[in-house]
Image (cartoon, rainbow, N blue to C red; front, top):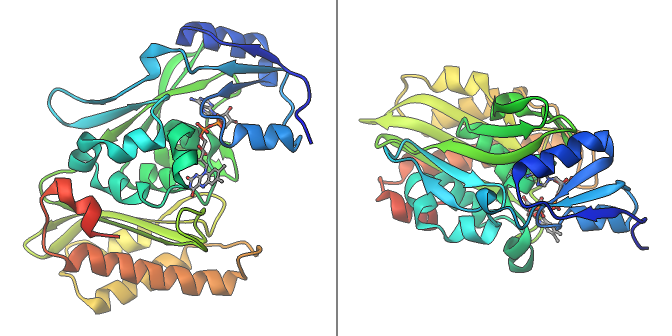
Length: 301
Ligand SMILES: Cc1cc2nc3c(=O)[nH]c(=O)nc-3n(C[C@H](O)[C@H](O)[C@H](O)COP(=O)(O)OP(=O)(O)OC[C@H]3O[C@@H](n4cnc5c(N)ncnc54)[C@H](O)[C@@H]3O)c2cc1C
């Protein structure tokens, strides 16, 4: 099948792109890497009147570390491959570096954008779960509303549903940098390496002298959006790591999931998989001796 007819625009600024989004109401779509967009167009799951190709907007390019090192900015045109290869990402955002190893295959990573993944909000995708775990800020811009910042925990509503309005584009995402005393872990179960996850887990916590605090544990691909576990954080706060704690945290986090039945299995199977995956990620996060940040991404996961 081929896509329905559409108009095509290639603006050179974010303002121009936002003006087009406003003009077309809900009938225009941003085109970034096209890796998800062209499949939905060709299958006629989507038939927008206008595609707004943002690939020539210079200001959307680049990974930038704040002068004081406190956060990393990833622009809307940064491809997965660039994120995966970035030394700054490995150094300041080891969780993203770990997760990137699971995102798609080289051909998709060469064009698909890290922000496109956040904009699309596929529940089985790695980047939304990492954004929630890292407490990222998504920067949205529109002609009429200007710029607004939305914390990742408030951004993902459900299956392909987010806080982004039709007239807004995602211009960048800001990730707080990993602190000296922080550890993180990531793993997922998928049919083949690089496929979307069947169940995945991302974790980040402070870990001082063997004591855990501020645990952020996110399970994804089970529910229509990434689920950050409040019970896990409460159980782990101030505790020393042990496999028994991992077991208790996994049980509490799984109780907060509400998995759908789909071709990957029943809710009961997904709960079992999630429980095993949470234990595994916690164990690798808290049992592994601290690595220099730049190498964590290749030793975990
Ligand atoms: C075979 C295959 C395997 C894949 N496997 C994985 C995987 O394992 N894990 C994973 O996470 N992803 C996977 N993907 C998806 C891939 O990561 C996509 O690149 C990503 O989901 C979308 O990024 P994109 O830049 O290609 O966006 P596009 O396809 O251009 O756009 C996707 C959607 O997001 C919107 N959009 C994009 N950018 C913006 C923006 N800046 N502002 C507002 N809206 C925007 C578009 O309008 C569109 O609705 C896979 C894709 C394919 C084809």
